[in-house]
Each structure stands twice: as structure tokens, then as C-alpha cells.
Image: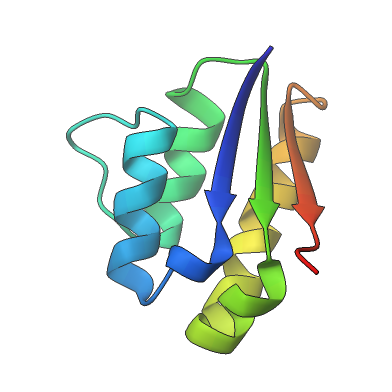
Length: 94
């Protein structure tokens, strides 16, 4: 199983979030860098199984506001859609 680690403290804005996701998840060149495109890629374009560990999610919320929550919702929905082949784990960084 592949594991991808997303560091919440590095997600300074929406653009950085999508750039990191594109790089770490090896999303295709046509990735549109928005939540609709993220859903499309998570459910059709990435190699499964994969576990995504989002470290310091609270810092992401501080930096991105509701966009972090909306992104997490996309991951949770994709986890259900893929029957658990995509897993999202929130890791606290204390």
C-alpha cells in the first residue's frame, strides 16, 4: 500500500495545497487544481490502494479556513467511494 504524507504547516494557501497534492499523489498533468478536479482524480486517476496521512490538520485549518474542511470532506467521500482503498488519516502534531 502506498502512503502519502501531507504536512499541514506547508499548506500556506489553496494553490500550495493543490501543488502538494498533485506532486505527492502523482496527479495527471490535466489536474485542474480545485476540489471538483481533486474528486475526479481521487476516484479515477490515482493508484490504489493509498493511505493519505494529513499531519497537523489544525494548522491547515488555521491557514486555509473552511477550504481545509472542504478538502477533508472530499477525501472522506473518496474513501467511501473507493470502498476504503483510499484511506485518509488525520495525524495530530503536538
